[in-house]
Image (cartoon, rainbow, N blue to C red; front, side, top):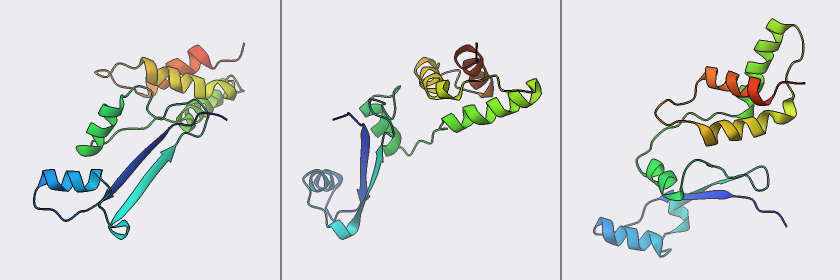
Length: 131
């Protein structure tokens, strides 16, 4: 057996007199299944967390306040690599290393500085170049 991480988020409504009783009703499963929907996200690779740089509380806070995030993926590394390889006229990156570089980039990022295309370029060059 392998470990796969998931985030499950149920949304809908409950009938209640106040926020506290609504919270109690939702937490204790007193929700009509026809009035709620479940969103589930499961990691696509074993032992890979979905939000490696966020605690569970931070994930919930962002959901509660509907904060939006820019999501960086392996596809962004591929897009950038193709552009740089076109300029270099040839394959210079090992695609098998893109996912590891992405995880390292997210783990190491500085929240006040953020992540940009320059950051992706840095991680491509540092961790994905062929020898």
